[in-house]
Image: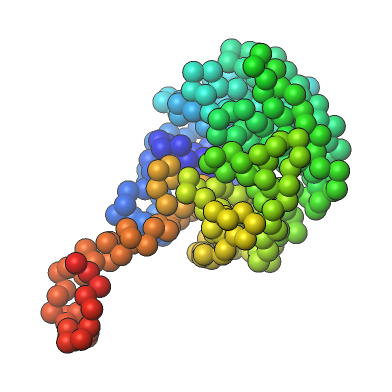
Amino acid sequence: MLFRSLPIATIGSGTAIGLWNPLSAASYASAALPAPLAASAAARGDIPPSLALSPDGGVVAAPLGNQKVGLWSTGSGRTAGPLTAPQPLTSVAYSPAADGPILAAGGSDGIVYLWPPGASQPTPINGHLAAEITSIAFSPNGALLAAGSADGTFLLAARGPDGQWTPIAPPTLPLDEINTVAFSADGTLLATGSASGTVRLWNISDPDKPVNKASLTGPAGQVVSVAFSEGGMLAASSDDDSIRVWNTRNPAAPTLVATFTGLADPTSVAWEPGTQTLVGAAPDGTLLTWDTNPGTVASRICRALAGYTAEVAAIVPSTGYPAACP
């Protein structure tokens, strides 16, 4: 699932990639999905493992499992033509530069393939990962790329002034299989989610020497998606039907602030830009949103209670009771 203001892009257990209008504030609950803005994809019998939305929201990309990346216009829903790599592809991501976004794809051969704007043939980055790439992400400023691998390591690659990408050796200590990677908003932290249910936080201020700052546990199943908010909250979805949120403002001592349920096998999480709203997606096509800002939640409750002054007064006598709402 990708959330870049407009639209929300999702892949469900059906045969289409869906593009949806974001949910309004009035439906911050388990409301049914709104009518799709557009929906298109070739008929498929499985779920594409990843998707990416271009920075301008105009194109959605997904690996097709046969050495190709499918591209669709979000305006018309029509295919923009596939891109081809030497090996089957498992994950995709766009760099954040709207004027010249790079499309990256992780290969089953452990190699990252890059397509600069207008390129039909990819440029490989070989970081010598021993297994397929399971997840790929760009840092917010587009200067770093991270790729997680089924071999338990991750690759960092740095973009030079000439536009060339240089791989940085991954940690020599193998971890358990990495399913997902994500950068913090300031680009100094990398989160990796693993098949063992562990989320690890890495300080990558010096990309040549990643430092493991914390290992977060709690999920009883695999961690399948991680995402940072702009304010330093880290969300992780697990196939134990839960989504956990940690405050990582102190990376050495993150604190668990919430555990959300309500989705069966949540496969993806994302934060609405500029807000503290978390969006989770499930294979059955359900999206749930949670507003994690206490102030806005309290304001919404007060607005809902505004027409029930007498009823509230009957339940909560005003004498000696501090008003919860202004």
